[in-house]
Length: 89
View 1 (cartoon, rainbow, N blue to C red):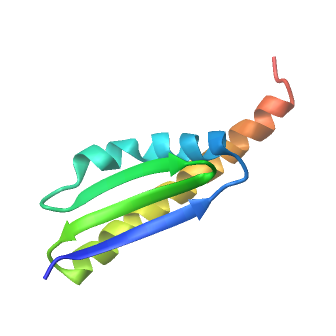
View 2: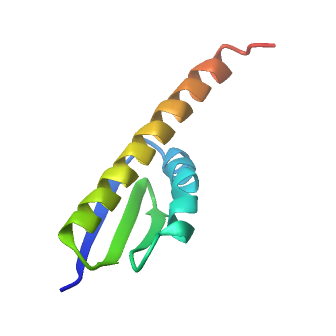
């Protein structure tokens, strides 16, 4: 049996969603083993698909890794946005 998952996250803007997707793009290419990860943005929604995991534990670990990467990207982008708005020379 092969396992799959889809994650959908809606952001306040399409540019923020695209920035998070760009931060995840290395995961799209690496996917160790048979697991396939792909992502896209439609409007303000980021969609990440995980396919072909041969064990539930593999799927679970991959999804957890994606959530950690998303959280890191969101935190970094939020900090960059704050710094940018202060116009630091």
